[in-house]
Amino acid sequence: MSDALPPPPPAPGYGPTPPAPRTSSNAVVALVLALLSWALCPVILAVGGLVLARSAQREIEASNGWVGGSGLVTATRWVAWINIVLSAVVLVVGLLFLIGAVVTSTTTTTGVAG
Image (cartoon, rainbow, N blue to C red; front, side, top):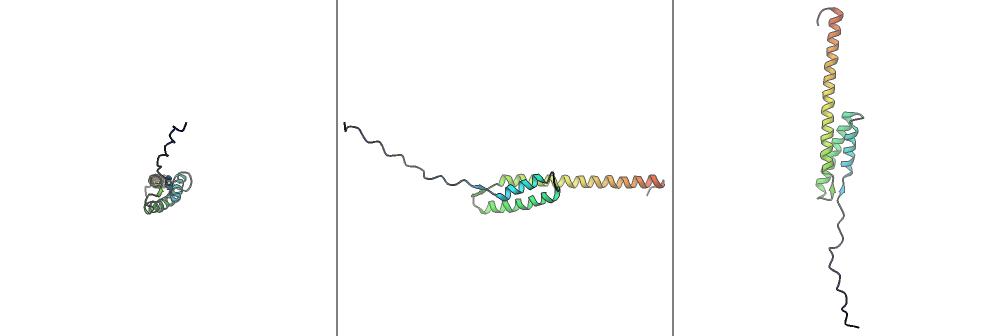
């Protein structure tokens, strides 16, 4: 009856798992600003997103891997710069149409160009 062997000792563990890196809150807010810039205050919110993206990038680089979010920073930069460029194009095209309308109106009213 006492011929039974005791159970083997448990296998050695790897210890507790280290905490996962957290995502930079500046990176999240920067992306939200860049996305909101498509609906509200295009250039202002896009520039704010770029400023926060730079701050988040510095935070991520200084953390030695403990803070993540570099993908969010990259996405923020793309979204914000596309918004700024498209806003500039719309502004230039709008000004050209306005100038063309004024020149056409002046020519039509006076009958003389210029």
